[in-house]
Length: 302
Image 1 (cartoon, rainbow, N blue to C red):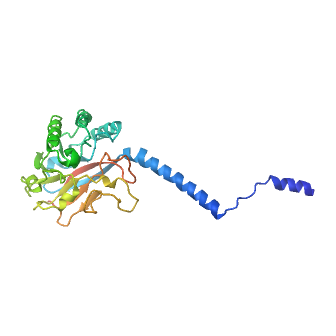
Image 2 (cartoon, rainbow, N blue to C red):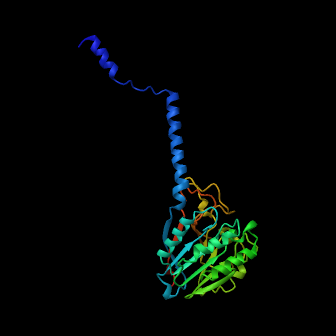
């Protein structure tokens, strides 16, 4: 082969890239920008509406035979209003109906109240909703009291209108459902919070369950001899977190109260639902949650 042909062949071969420090930093930066954009798209468009149906047992002392193996579904923090997508919320409530709970418990923040029309929208979302086959019980959250969480009249109107849909909001009171005493505490940040009043009908020999929107309230005085489950919401699980780390933003004093079950030292246990809605349309590693509890007779009881 001539020297001239060899030169032509060599010219046809692409030159290998030279990995300079500048080139490496540029490619790395572009990769990070692309990854960040993908993560942002996921956190805004996918995870806020990607519901996690969590299934777990709920052993309760003195549970009547008729409720053993029945389902109690907890949802929380719907935040119906100007921020949460309406079609998503209708689909989410439709999914709850499809799961056919025997008892449905809604642990507060039905709405994010910014204008008078929000109450009507909340009722519109819930009017064709199939709740618990035995009962649907609920408690108010701080946002159900409107501006500064202090509008008692607004929460009263919500309570009355939900009652017409067979959704009973417990305002420092209890309801007896097939032998299960469900105790409802008014919101901790609202003006009517009173644990002692909510537990007026508590009987240690009776199967009991408590609903309390803000998990910080479990550290307040007034729980007395109560031992058992407390279902909460409020935190949204922090909405965003780096895996294996606690979320940087949580609306609670006790940073142990993030999501899921937390055992308390006195024998109570609180379960914190991550909620269905959001105050900002962003979730990362904290999917919205529907919790399906299977009621069990406590194994400690013969």
